[in-house]
Structure formats: structure tokens, C-alpha cells
Length: 139
Image 1 (cartoon, helix red, strand yellow):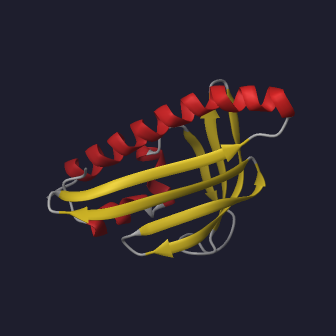
Image 2 (image 1 turned 60 degrees about the horizontal axis):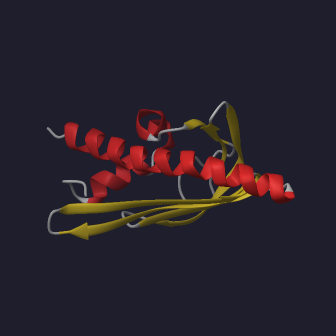
């Protein structure tokens, strides 16, 4: 729960230039198109998972201002993700979901399970960092 309005939360999560400030594990979220925000924007995304960086190219598939951002992979690691905002009496509930799949049969499956633990920790840390950043930026 973030003690602020969805508009303020969305302003942070919809600005990839701010991701280094709070998106734990993301080492690159570089625009690949002139369009830097909104539906159709494409990015080169890398996430540190242990001692490696994994990722690929993603495209924003849905952009509902102050409500939802979804993305999916176009190249590299197969992935889907979403930011979802829900207004409440206490502020804004922010959800982050990331799903990914690695190829490689049984070995890929084992690596995916190990990497999944890191990704889950990074997601929780990201939500906490976003909350701290937003609540500390109040005038």
C-alpha cells in the first residue's frame, strides 16, 4: 500500500528513466523506439539474475493511464509483465507481476526455478522501493 494517489504512483512507474531509482535487478530499460512511453513503446530490458544478465526486447501492450501497464517479449527471454494500480481509502495498492520462461528442456526448467527466486525477491524489493520513493517525495 502506498500512501498517495494513483496519479502520483503512475507517474513513477510509467517513467522508465526512473527505473534505476527503484526497479531492483533491472540493469537496462533502454528505449528502442522514438516513442518512450505508452502503448507500442519498445525497450531493451536486462535484469541481473545472480551473476548473469538476462532479458530481451519488450513492447508495451496496454497502457491505461493511472491504472495499468502491460508488456510482453518480442525477442530474447520469453516474458510478460504488468504494473497494476488500485485506489483505496488509504492510498494506492500497487501490484507488479513478471512471468518468464527459459528454453533448454530440463536444464532450462531448473535454471528457471532458481532464477524465479531472485526475480520474486527483486519484485518485492521493487514495490518497497517505489513506496519509499513516492512517500519521501511528498512536498
